[in-house]
Length: 130
Image (tube, one colour):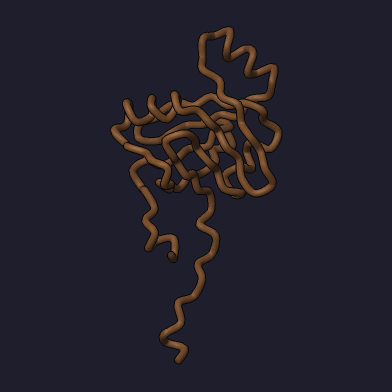
């Protein structure tokens, strides 16, 4: 019964999973962070902007008064862990996070060296093919 088969979906591309303690980037989204040890996080409208930083850039950002976050890299994902950051995102965006992931699509702006997470386009379990 070929009509009853539910086929697996292709990779969703860049995906950011937001929890109450961290932001986890899938393999497609972490590409920009392969050489980064740190990042800065900000908002551009309804998009979360993440800029990768090497150690020298991180030191400059700190001297300029910007918050800098450690990036944990693994072969299949990257993670920015900070409860304070997630509380700030909650405050500014009105989104609530828990120990269950809220997933959002993201894309890389190569010109600006940013990963932009679209906070208005949350991906549901149904859209993920689950």
